[in-house]
Image 1 (cartoon, rainbow, N blue to C red):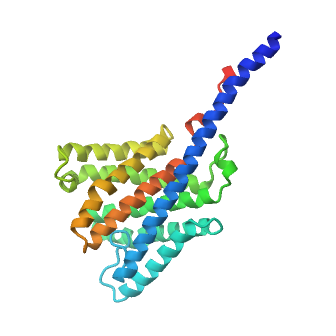
Image 2: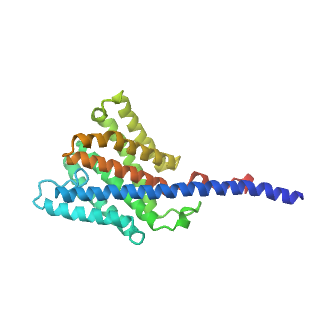
Image 3: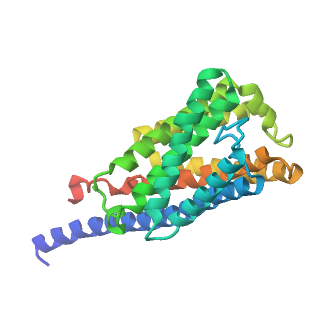
Length: 291
């Protein structure tokens, strides 16, 4: 073998290994996207079903109180949430369903949560509801962007990030910082809702606050962003299993408990959507030594 052929072979193998790693990671994140979309859509449709069953607005996310038209609002909200959530799972209509969800959630923040916060700026429950609505709206915006992209784009290392994806990720990262701040401000309440069988309530309350802040910083900065989003998904998923399901079982008639459980599920799916929208760590430029 000539020296030139030997050099070519030496350069080819690292490049091939790099490509295999990238393709494997992209396949994993495609599965993450599909799982995140299914979880997110299921939770949003279930929130819609809850509206139809109760003939009322979504607790926490849609703060409409003392209005004579609540039954009408409940019916409209329920039908729209269910229809939009189903649409996100159908290839031809996925982007339209995601756009409807994003628009609805952001409008709730602007038209309902903002005035409520202006009237009661120290209400921790209202801040939490606003942050949850904002985070879910951001996830829906990312879902809109992802469903508008081709599979080829998601496998391209240096693809340009589209505006919906960028805005959605920024909004989601900001919401994570907000959740972290709320954990620190209302540390006593956070410690109180931790199940009794878990020790060191205050420690874990602070730990989850730190985890939210770390996730927000990672997503906003792009440093270990995918890992931050995946860890966020695992965190919300664990809360769904070990905190919210047991609370619903013991408080089956509580609309607030059902809503909290479904929001935790939606947040788990939303974090998977954020993770799947981020560029793969291995998709950086091939180092000079193997270029």
